[in-house]
Image (cartoon, rainbow, N blue to C red; front, side):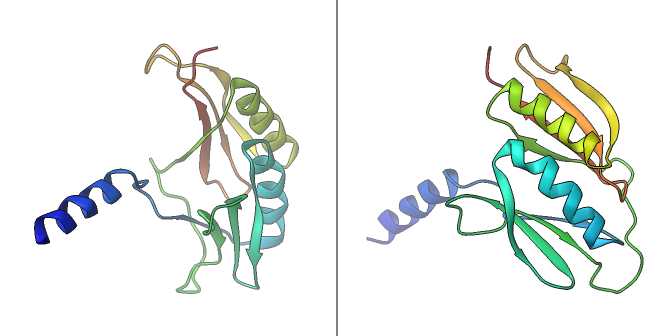
Length: 144
């Protein structure tokens, strides 16, 4: 019996995503919220929770918010991490294009226009920075 429970737990773990959630620091939640509302909509993510110190984004039907924009818990200024980036999955290349356009229109800056990248044949991505300087990408790995 114990072996069965262990195997079942392994199967359950295998089918779970590696990340539970991601937090990105902001010094201006109002500006950050407006940016993320616009940039994440093409990826099927929307604002689901908020209070005076955080805004949570998630997909319809997901029980959790997977991306949080927060004021730092230690009450110090939010700063960006050199080499840090959050990559978000897109359902299509058109969604990557829409993410990039919406992010720029929402006050983000371009870090790489939508297009194929050399990582593999179907790696189509766009890169932006949010108003606080956090780097994001939207990636579609489906052939089109």
